[in-house]
Image (cartoon, rainbow, N blue to C red; front, side):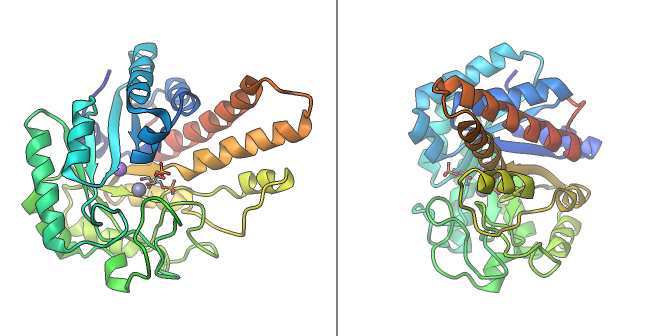
Length: 328
Ligand code: G3H
Ligand code: 13P
Ligand code: NA
Ligand code: ZN
């Protein structure tokens, strides 16, 4: 059944687990996530970006999620809007049946220009008023996602600041976080601690300098009752990079957020962990491998089937590592 994010994250906090929030764009990704959740008895957060709605079409996406809920009636599902760029976008998602929305006021509506603190408070608060009136949860974001190595947001196109960010923007301030939560009433807060969207997060395995887990601890100590959200939390598995490279793909050397660091985060208040890139890598690796091994194959279902299995395996690993398995 569909439930609100707040309900799920309150349960997660009570029981000390985290929930992966996987991005969905198509039928195969939805099936993979649901199959994995069913196999390990985990609740689910399905999240759709503006890009996902553009890709699939809003009615198609909505009805695919309805299908997933019907197929797995025993699995609690949160339908979440990822990185809403304005109150209008969040309102449209609420009308479309989402049970949770992210108002990302850390950037202006263009999703590229860092905003002022006052703008962020104002738009987020407006969405909270609108959403809470009908039982929909709200995630806000304070601080800009980006690399502490380079000051860059990460993704070339898509969600992320343009140009170089300074150190202060890249790390969420604990006192400002407390003020933000008090003034907006958000149910969950996305924070910046050095992660970024996409496959190119770190040029070498992250250290305490580039992945600021100490900052996360300081934020959690300041607002212990706020559910924290880690964006840019793909681990960029080296074995999938190897499969992609061995089968004609070209991906530069790169490192993601180690699963054990996310588990440390969960011990320090992280309840929602956003993952998109890892599913993309697993699906692409599986499809490239089959295409190379079976050049005579031309039924797309053959490729999509191995891609679904690869994504499901990855999802199951995350449900288990983050501790949401067994809590459906
Ligand atoms: O926030 C970034 C997510 O990975 C969504 O990416 O905008 O390409 O759908 P997208
Ligand atoms: P990744 O690119 O690390 O998977 O992050 C996804 C994300 O944060 C979606 O909001
Ligand atoms: Na989100
Ligand atoms: Zn994100």
